[in-house]
Image (cartoon, rainbow, N blue to C red; front, side, top):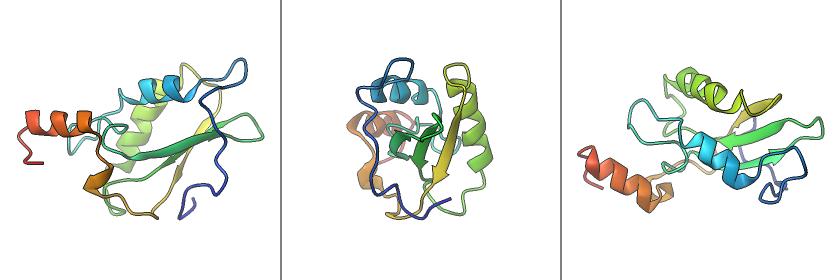
Length: 120
């Protein structure tokens, strides 16, 4: 586990044959819902980036709304459910710097939160 995202992330937007693109990765991860806030982790801004490791595994640089989040395992299980059928190898690199903040929430995420009654 690193404290910060990778210094030199590999661009996954144009993935090599047999690998998912950034768009495909994010689309799959939009099915992963933060259990406390009810918003997907992409629009919540918990996904800092993705890259391919030398061993062919997809590495997700992710954070949580707080380092003390008790539901980290739940989020990882949801990632497994959504990426497992698409990839042989993947792993989460939990990062804490920069810390997550509400400024990372996308406009779609803000709309989802408002629909759930949050004042954001």
